[in-house]
Length: 231
Length: 231
DNA sequence: CGCTCACCTAGAACAAGTTTCAGAGTTGAT
DNA sequence: ATCAACTCTGAAACTTGTTCTAGGTGAGCG
Image (cartoon, rainbow over all chains, first blue to last red; front, side, top):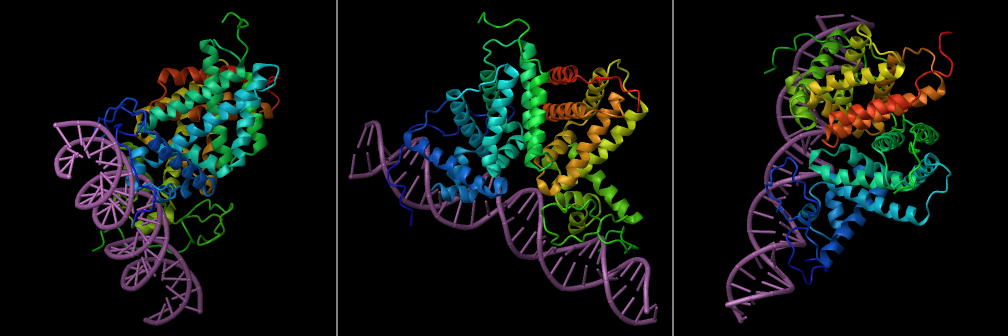
């Protein structure tokens, strides 16, 4: 007895697996579809899955995200879930991408108000941090997935990294960063990432995280050697 | 048919599980033995296990460390392996502790030769990095375990963190760091850690890692506000 | 109308981490 | 010498991520 959500179906696009990783893994089973647009109904499925994942991660964290339960909760067969997200890690990283996009949108609407780039970046990161604090289990799940990801998830993890960079550069209000500044931004990202992990595993307090973030932002010399108004 | 390694046995200390985590987990099954000295024979078992773990991790990395195989390879029953290391993560983190101790010993014998603290720290970290490069699979396994560790492994992860701090402080040749410097050291650790992950997952090149390490060491202002010769 | 194709579903099957259990074996104490 | 306590062993069982198989359903098309 099927539930009641499988009345009519679509049949067009090849595979719902986006952003295929063609890195070192041979093109074994995954079709080389470069960008399948995803049917409306498929997009809806994808959303249901991501929402279920975030909900389950919200309580219990990483361990509470069980693939069978995600599948059931999003009214999708287990095989289908794996067709959309080839592993639990992929699923959680995609969830993080999703959340990051939301965050970036929010930040765009309410940009940080600090005077210097360093202040704005620190403020932005602490704001993001507070957002994560509101859902510590979810944060735990996403970050654990992110750091546990192996090479097969590189494209997605890279995407997350680019998104983070974009957020920081936005906060700096710097359209044309120098290589040195990009390196500084990477260091800030590293620090944020790692401080987050330390906090999530209970090895660092919030104030310690704040201090570390302020430290790295202040010392990273975010001001351009020459003021950048020639963009 | 027992193998041939279980002739005589010891029985004294409570549990070989060191550094019990009494954090939030209730004292369910683990006896509260604070520091069980481990019989000679138990110590030998522990070594065998760690060596087998490192060997398996050396090829194949994280996934190649399979608990059944570790047990078999170290001539120990599966249950015993779990008595010594309550999870695969614990086992790999302990392996990292072991390797770090070795590294620290080596570094003590051949300290870095740079002029400034920043140079010495960067040199030290790059040397450690090259050591990891020699066994990339092992490095992968240990670092993945470290970042994947949840709260139940906090004590052990903390120990690794302290060891790393000690190595950096040694390189700085600074016995009495200021709080600001400690924060800087934490940032450096965060960066090292995260850069390592990025390299291991193929998202950063070695030169990028070097640049990031030099960046963070240079900018972190490792020189004391006043020169520290009053220790 | 019936064919074909891609997608989906339900469920079994497999793999590896973890737990559990009964039975020895060892050691120190009485 | 016997006893009690503890550890180790060998093997099965359980859990959860992942894969596989068989069958069903809708859409375009001859």
